Figure 1: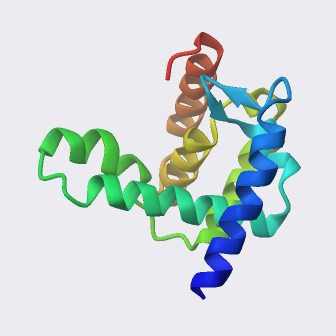
Figure 2 (figure 1 turned 135 degrees about the horizontal axis):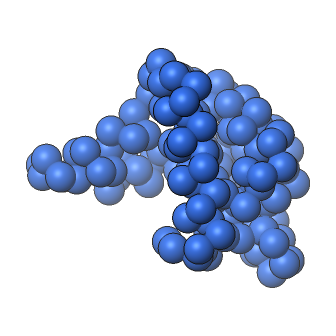
Figure 3 (figure 1 turned 90 degrees about the vertical axis):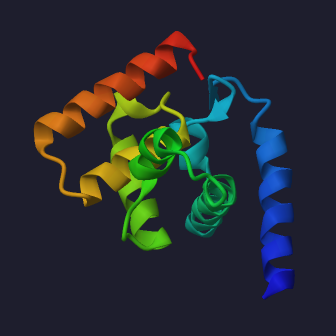
Amino acid sequence: MKKKVILLAAIYLSVASGLSQVEGFRASGRFNGRFWEMMPKAQKTAYVQGFYDGWFLYTGNQNCPEVQVAVVDPYRTRLTFQEIVNEVDAFYREGANKPVPIAGAVRYAARKAGGAGAEDLANLAAELRRLAASGIR
C-alpha cells in the first residue's frame, strides 16, 4: 500500500510539474478547474486524498476556536473521496468556475453535502470566483 501511495505521488508530481507551467492551470498560485479537468479520475481521487491528508496534518494540532471555524469547518464532510471528486467535477462543469482553485471547489462540495441551500451555494460560488479573479490567496 505504501508503495502505491508513493507511486501515485510520483505520478502526480511529474504530471503536475509539467502542467503547472501551462497558462491557465493555476489561480492565485494554486491549481484550478482547468488543471482538474486534465486529470484522470484516479489522479483526482489521489489529489483529494492528499488534500485531506495535508488538511488533517495542519488542523490536527490546532486547539484554537478561530482555526476551527476558519480552516476546519468549511472542509468537514462525510463524503467519500470519490463522492468529493464527483461533486468537484460537477462544480467545474459550469465554465465560470474553472478559474476557482481546487481547494475552493472542495469547500463548495463540503458545503453542498452539509445541506446548504441553493442561495448559499450560489453566494459561495460567486465569492470563490471573485477571489480567483482578484488573485487573493
